[in-house]
Length: 349
Image (cartoon, rainbow, N blue to C red; front, side, top):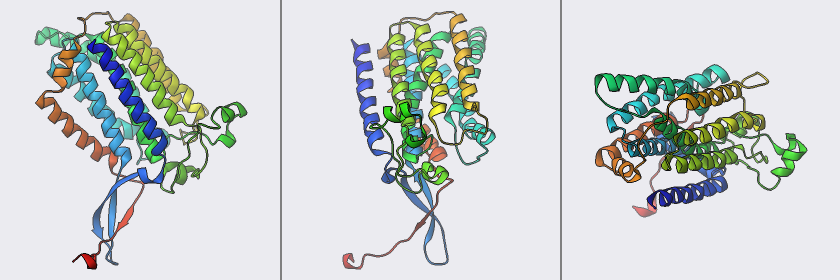
Protein backbone atom coordinates (compact mmCIF):
# COMPACT_ATOMS: atom_id res chain seq x y z
CA UNK A 1 0.00 0.00 0.00
CA UNK A 2 2.83 2.39 0.83
CA UNK A 3 4.30 1.86 -2.65
CA UNK A 4 1.07 2.83 -4.39
CA UNK A 5 0.55 5.84 -2.13
CA UNK A 6 4.14 7.00 -2.75
CA UNK A 7 3.87 6.79 -6.54
CA UNK A 8 0.43 8.42 -6.66
CA UNK A 9 1.44 11.18 -4.22
CA UNK A 10 4.60 11.90 -6.16
CA UNK A 11 2.67 11.94 -9.45
CA UNK A 12 0.06 14.32 -8.07
CA UNK A 13 2.62 16.75 -6.67
CA UNK A 14 4.79 16.61 -9.77
CA UNK A 15 2.02 17.24 -12.31
CA UNK A 16 0.55 20.03 -10.17
CA UNK A 17 3.96 21.74 -10.13
CA UNK A 18 4.41 21.23 -13.89
CA UNK A 19 0.95 22.62 -14.65
CA UNK A 20 1.73 25.74 -12.64
CA UNK A 21 5.18 26.12 -14.18
CA UNK A 22 4.08 25.71 -17.79
CA UNK A 23 1.39 28.34 -17.28
CA UNK A 24 3.39 30.93 -15.33
CA UNK A 25 7.14 30.62 -15.83
CA UNK A 26 7.38 32.02 -19.39
CA UNK A 27 6.28 35.39 -17.94
CA UNK A 28 8.93 38.08 -17.44
CA UNK A 29 8.28 38.08 -13.68
CA UNK A 30 9.70 34.57 -13.24
CA UNK A 31 13.23 34.97 -14.58
CA UNK A 32 15.12 36.98 -11.96
CA UNK A 33 14.81 35.92 -8.36
CA UNK A 34 17.00 38.62 -6.79
CA UNK A 35 19.71 41.15 -7.63
CA UNK A 36 22.66 41.43 -5.25
CA UNK A 37 24.56 44.77 -5.30
CA UNK A 38 28.23 44.09 -5.99
CA UNK A 39 30.08 47.29 -6.98
CA UNK A 40 29.10 50.96 -6.75
CA UNK A 41 29.33 53.07 -9.90
CA UNK A 42 30.03 56.78 -10.20
CA UNK A 43 26.36 57.79 -10.34
CA UNK A 44 25.62 56.24 -6.96
CA UNK A 45 23.92 53.12 -8.32
CA UNK A 46 25.22 49.60 -7.84
CA UNK A 47 26.05 46.97 -10.41
CA UNK A 48 24.00 43.92 -9.49
CA UNK A 49 24.53 40.18 -9.69
CA UNK A 50 21.31 38.52 -10.84
CA UNK A 51 20.18 35.35 -9.10
CA UNK A 52 17.75 33.45 -11.28
CA UNK A 53 14.84 31.10 -10.97
CA UNK A 54 16.84 28.96 -13.42
CA UNK A 55 19.22 28.31 -10.54
CA UNK A 56 16.35 27.73 -8.11
CA UNK A 57 14.67 25.10 -10.25
CA UNK A 58 17.96 23.49 -11.34
CA UNK A 59 19.09 23.16 -7.73
CA UNK A 60 15.68 21.89 -6.63
CA UNK A 61 15.52 19.34 -9.45
CA UNK A 62 19.02 17.99 -8.82
CA UNK A 63 18.56 17.82 -5.05
CA UNK A 64 15.25 16.03 -5.55
CA UNK A 65 16.98 13.54 -7.85
CA UNK A 66 19.70 12.89 -5.26
CA UNK A 67 17.09 12.40 -2.53
CA UNK A 68 15.07 10.00 -4.69
CA UNK A 69 18.23 8.09 -5.58
CA UNK A 70 19.00 7.68 -1.87
CA UNK A 71 15.47 6.44 -1.21
CA UNK A 72 15.58 3.85 -3.97
CA UNK A 73 19.07 2.46 -3.45
CA UNK A 74 18.56 2.39 0.33
CA UNK A 75 15.33 0.44 -0.20
CA UNK A 76 17.40 -2.44 -1.63
CA UNK A 77 19.96 -2.41 1.16
CA UNK A 78 22.73 -0.25 -0.32
CA UNK A 79 24.83 1.27 2.48
CA UNK A 80 24.43 5.03 2.68
CA UNK A 81 28.18 5.61 2.44
CA UNK A 82 28.40 3.61 -0.80
CA UNK A 83 25.39 5.39 -2.27
CA UNK A 84 26.81 8.76 -1.25
CA UNK A 85 30.17 7.99 -2.85
CA UNK A 86 28.53 7.09 -6.16
CA UNK A 87 26.36 10.22 -6.13
CA UNK A 88 29.31 12.45 -5.19
CA UNK A 89 31.43 10.99 -8.00
CA UNK A 90 28.68 11.60 -10.55
CA UNK A 91 28.17 15.17 -9.32
CA UNK A 92 31.91 15.83 -9.54
CA UNK A 93 31.80 14.76 -13.19
CA UNK A 94 28.48 16.24 -14.25
CA UNK A 95 28.62 19.74 -12.81
CA UNK A 96 31.77 20.88 -14.65
CA UNK A 97 30.75 18.82 -17.69
CA UNK A 98 27.51 20.79 -17.98
CA UNK A 99 29.63 23.86 -18.83
CA UNK A 100 32.49 22.21 -20.71
CA UNK A 101 30.30 20.27 -23.15
CA UNK A 102 28.23 23.38 -23.92
CA UNK A 103 31.43 25.34 -24.58
CA UNK A 104 32.73 22.66 -26.95
CA UNK A 105 29.51 22.04 -28.89
CA UNK A 106 27.83 25.45 -28.82
CA UNK A 107 30.92 27.63 -28.51
CA UNK A 108 29.49 29.40 -25.46
CA UNK A 109 31.33 29.65 -22.16
CA UNK A 110 28.45 31.04 -20.11
CA UNK A 111 25.77 28.43 -20.64
CA UNK A 112 24.97 24.93 -19.37
CA UNK A 113 23.92 21.67 -20.99
CA UNK A 114 22.29 19.07 -18.79
CA UNK A 115 22.13 16.70 -21.78
CA UNK A 116 25.91 16.73 -22.17
CA UNK A 117 26.46 16.09 -18.46
CA UNK A 118 23.87 13.31 -18.44
CA UNK A 119 25.54 11.70 -21.46
CA UNK A 120 28.90 11.48 -19.67
CA UNK A 121 27.19 10.05 -16.60
CA UNK A 122 25.36 7.49 -18.75
CA UNK A 123 28.60 6.28 -20.33
CA UNK A 124 30.60 6.15 -17.11
CA UNK A 125 28.05 4.84 -14.60
CA UNK A 126 27.54 1.18 -15.72
CA UNK A 127 31.24 0.18 -15.83
CA UNK A 128 31.92 2.41 -12.82
CA UNK A 129 29.31 0.60 -10.74
CA UNK A 130 30.57 -2.81 -11.84
CA UNK A 131 34.09 -1.82 -10.78
CA UNK A 132 32.79 -0.43 -7.49
CA UNK A 133 30.82 -3.62 -6.85
CA UNK A 134 33.98 -5.72 -7.27
CA UNK A 135 36.15 -3.39 -5.18
CA UNK A 136 33.67 -3.03 -2.31
CA UNK A 137 33.09 -6.77 -2.12
CA UNK A 138 36.81 -7.59 -2.25
CA UNK A 139 38.21 -4.97 0.11
CA UNK A 140 35.36 -3.98 2.42
CA UNK A 141 32.96 -6.94 2.31
CA UNK A 142 30.18 -4.56 1.19
CA UNK A 143 27.56 -5.70 -1.32
CA UNK A 144 25.88 -3.39 -3.80
CA UNK A 145 23.44 -4.42 -6.52
CA UNK A 146 24.33 -2.85 -9.85
CA UNK A 147 21.11 -3.26 -11.83
CA UNK A 148 18.86 -1.78 -9.11
CA UNK A 149 21.29 1.13 -8.75
CA UNK A 150 21.23 1.77 -12.51
CA UNK A 151 17.44 1.60 -12.47
CA UNK A 152 17.35 4.06 -9.57
CA UNK A 153 19.67 6.41 -11.46
CA UNK A 154 17.53 6.26 -14.62
CA UNK A 155 14.36 6.99 -12.64
CA UNK A 156 15.95 9.80 -10.63
CA UNK A 157 17.31 11.37 -13.82
CA UNK A 158 13.94 11.26 -15.58
CA UNK A 159 11.99 12.77 -12.69
CA UNK A 160 14.58 15.37 -11.75
CA UNK A 161 14.97 16.45 -15.37
CA UNK A 162 11.19 16.77 -15.59
CA UNK A 163 11.38 19.35 -12.80
CA UNK A 164 14.54 20.82 -14.31
CA UNK A 165 12.75 21.82 -17.50
CA UNK A 166 10.96 24.45 -15.40
CA UNK A 167 14.34 26.18 -15.20
CA UNK A 168 14.30 26.42 -18.99
CA UNK A 169 10.74 27.75 -18.97
CA UNK A 170 11.88 30.44 -16.56
CA UNK A 171 15.04 31.50 -18.40
CA UNK A 172 13.57 31.06 -21.87
CA UNK A 173 16.23 28.61 -23.06
CA UNK A 174 15.94 25.26 -24.87
CA UNK A 175 13.07 26.80 -26.82
CA UNK A 176 11.12 25.37 -29.70
CA UNK A 177 10.65 26.60 -33.25
CA UNK A 178 8.19 29.42 -33.99
CA UNK A 179 4.89 27.98 -35.18
CA UNK A 180 5.18 30.12 -38.33
CA UNK A 181 8.33 28.17 -39.29
CA UNK A 182 7.06 24.74 -38.29
CA UNK A 183 5.39 22.29 -40.65
CA UNK A 184 1.63 22.76 -41.12
CA UNK A 185 0.94 19.60 -39.11
CA UNK A 186 3.09 20.73 -36.16
CA UNK A 187 1.62 24.24 -36.32
CA UNK A 188 -1.93 22.84 -36.15
CA UNK A 189 -1.00 20.45 -33.35
CA UNK A 190 0.28 23.26 -31.12
CA UNK A 191 -1.99 26.03 -32.31
CA UNK A 192 -3.70 26.18 -28.92
CA UNK A 193 -0.97 24.68 -26.75
CA UNK A 194 2.09 26.76 -27.52
CA UNK A 195 4.53 28.77 -25.40
CA UNK A 196 5.10 32.53 -25.54
CA UNK A 197 8.06 34.08 -23.70
CA UNK A 198 7.78 37.61 -22.40
CA UNK A 199 10.66 40.00 -21.69
CA UNK A 200 13.85 41.05 -23.45
CA UNK A 201 16.13 39.12 -21.09
CA UNK A 202 14.67 35.71 -21.90
CA UNK A 203 17.13 33.72 -24.00
CA UNK A 204 14.54 33.15 -26.73
CA UNK A 205 14.38 36.96 -27.04
CA UNK A 206 18.02 38.02 -26.95
CA UNK A 207 19.42 35.01 -28.83
CA UNK A 208 16.77 34.57 -31.54
CA UNK A 209 14.40 37.55 -31.36
CA UNK A 210 11.45 35.33 -30.43
CA UNK A 211 9.85 37.32 -27.61
CA UNK A 212 6.04 37.34 -27.82
CA UNK A 213 6.24 34.66 -30.52
CA UNK A 214 4.15 31.44 -30.33
CA UNK A 215 6.64 28.57 -30.07
CA UNK A 216 6.51 24.77 -30.09
CA UNK A 217 6.34 23.93 -26.34
CA UNK A 218 9.40 21.67 -26.31
CA UNK A 219 10.20 22.26 -22.64
CA UNK A 220 6.65 21.44 -21.54
CA UNK A 221 6.52 18.25 -23.62
CA UNK A 222 9.90 17.19 -22.26
CA UNK A 223 8.69 17.67 -18.69
CA UNK A 224 5.61 15.55 -19.30
CA UNK A 225 7.44 12.76 -21.19
CA UNK A 226 10.16 12.55 -18.55
CA UNK A 227 7.62 12.58 -15.72
CA UNK A 228 5.60 9.73 -17.22
CA UNK A 229 8.76 7.72 -17.95
CA UNK A 230 10.13 8.24 -14.46
CA UNK A 231 6.86 7.33 -12.76
CA UNK A 232 6.54 4.17 -14.88
CA UNK A 233 10.09 3.22 -13.95
CA UNK A 234 9.39 3.95 -10.29
CA UNK A 235 6.39 1.64 -10.25
CA UNK A 236 8.40 -1.14 -11.90
CA UNK A 237 11.29 -0.59 -9.48
CA UNK A 238 9.07 -0.92 -6.41
CA UNK A 239 7.64 -4.10 -7.95
CA UNK A 240 11.19 -5.51 -8.18
CA UNK A 241 11.37 -5.48 -11.98
CA UNK A 242 14.84 -3.88 -12.20
CA UNK A 243 15.54 -4.35 -15.88
CA UNK A 244 12.27 -2.88 -17.12
CA UNK A 245 12.45 -0.17 -14.46
CA UNK A 246 15.73 0.98 -16.01
CA UNK A 247 15.03 0.40 -19.70
CA UNK A 248 11.65 2.21 -19.78
CA UNK A 249 12.99 5.64 -18.68
CA UNK A 250 16.21 5.19 -20.68
CA UNK A 251 14.39 4.65 -23.97
CA UNK A 252 11.78 7.34 -23.28
CA UNK A 253 14.16 10.06 -22.12
CA UNK A 254 16.99 9.57 -24.59
CA UNK A 255 14.60 8.74 -27.43
CA UNK A 256 12.64 11.93 -26.87
CA UNK A 257 15.91 13.85 -26.52
CA UNK A 258 16.87 12.76 -30.05
CA UNK A 259 13.43 13.55 -31.51
CA UNK A 260 12.95 16.89 -29.72
CA UNK A 261 16.10 18.33 -31.26
CA UNK A 262 14.19 18.58 -34.54
CA UNK A 263 11.61 20.85 -32.89
CA UNK A 264 14.09 23.26 -31.30
CA UNK A 265 15.16 26.68 -32.53
CA UNK A 266 18.04 27.49 -30.16
CA UNK A 267 21.60 27.04 -31.40
CA UNK A 268 22.66 23.37 -31.17
CA UNK A 269 25.91 23.50 -33.12
CA UNK A 270 26.44 23.94 -36.84
CA UNK A 271 25.84 20.36 -38.04
CA UNK A 272 22.55 19.31 -39.65
CA UNK A 273 22.23 16.51 -37.10
CA UNK A 274 23.19 18.00 -33.75
CA UNK A 275 25.82 16.53 -31.48
CA UNK A 276 23.12 16.19 -28.84
CA UNK A 277 21.09 13.93 -31.12
CA UNK A 278 24.13 11.75 -31.71
CA UNK A 279 24.80 11.59 -27.98
CA UNK A 280 21.18 10.71 -27.26
CA UNK A 281 21.16 7.83 -29.75
CA UNK A 282 24.50 6.52 -28.47
CA UNK A 283 23.35 6.73 -24.85
CA UNK A 284 20.05 4.96 -25.60
CA UNK A 285 21.71 2.09 -27.49
CA UNK A 286 24.62 1.75 -25.06
CA UNK A 287 22.51 1.82 -21.90
CA UNK A 288 19.93 -0.59 -23.30
CA UNK A 289 22.68 -3.06 -24.19
CA UNK A 290 24.31 -2.73 -20.77
CA UNK A 291 20.99 -3.13 -18.99
CA UNK A 292 20.25 -6.29 -20.97
CA UNK A 293 23.51 -8.03 -20.04
CA UNK A 294 24.04 -6.94 -16.41
CA UNK A 295 22.74 -9.67 -14.06
CA UNK A 296 19.52 -8.93 -12.23
CA UNK A 297 19.88 -9.27 -8.48
CA UNK A 298 18.77 -7.53 -5.33
CA UNK A 299 16.27 -7.90 -2.49
CA UNK A 300 12.65 -6.86 -2.62
CA UNK A 301 12.51 -3.05 -2.22
CA UNK A 302 11.62 -1.80 1.25
CA UNK A 303 10.35 1.72 0.60
CA UNK A 304 9.90 2.46 4.30
CA UNK A 305 13.61 1.82 4.88
CA UNK A 306 14.53 4.12 2.02
CA UNK A 307 12.29 6.90 3.30
CA UNK A 308 13.70 6.53 6.80
CA UNK A 309 17.22 6.92 5.42
CA UNK A 310 16.52 10.07 3.42
CA UNK A 311 14.68 11.74 6.31
CA UNK A 312 17.50 11.21 8.79
CA UNK A 313 18.98 14.43 10.18
CA UNK A 314 22.40 13.96 8.60
CA UNK A 315 21.02 13.35 5.11
CA UNK A 316 18.64 16.31 5.34
CA UNK A 317 21.50 18.65 6.28
CA UNK A 318 23.65 17.35 3.42
CA UNK A 319 20.79 17.82 0.95
CA UNK A 320 20.32 21.39 2.15
CA UNK A 321 24.03 22.14 1.71
CA UNK A 322 23.90 20.52 -1.72
CA UNK A 323 20.94 22.70 -2.74
CA UNK A 324 22.73 25.89 -1.72
CA UNK A 325 25.88 24.91 -3.62
CA UNK A 326 23.91 24.01 -6.74
CA UNK A 327 21.92 27.24 -6.58
CA UNK A 328 25.09 29.32 -6.39
CA UNK A 329 26.59 27.34 -9.29
CA UNK A 330 23.60 27.49 -11.63
CA UNK A 331 21.77 30.56 -10.36
CA UNK A 332 24.35 33.34 -10.82
CA UNK A 333 23.47 34.81 -14.18
CA UNK A 334 26.48 35.39 -16.42
CA UNK A 335 24.53 36.75 -19.39
CA UNK A 336 22.34 39.38 -17.72
CA UNK A 337 23.14 42.34 -15.52
CA UNK A 338 21.27 44.82 -13.35
CA UNK A 339 21.55 48.28 -11.84
CA UNK A 340 20.41 48.63 -8.23
CA UNK A 341 19.74 51.89 -6.40
CA UNK A 342 18.57 52.62 -2.85
CA UNK A 343 16.73 55.53 -1.27
CA UNK A 344 15.09 56.52 1.97
CA UNK A 345 11.27 56.68 2.13
CA UNK A 346 10.98 60.07 3.77
CA UNK A 347 7.36 59.76 4.91
CA UNK A 348 8.17 56.65 6.91
CA UNK A 349 10.99 58.18 8.98
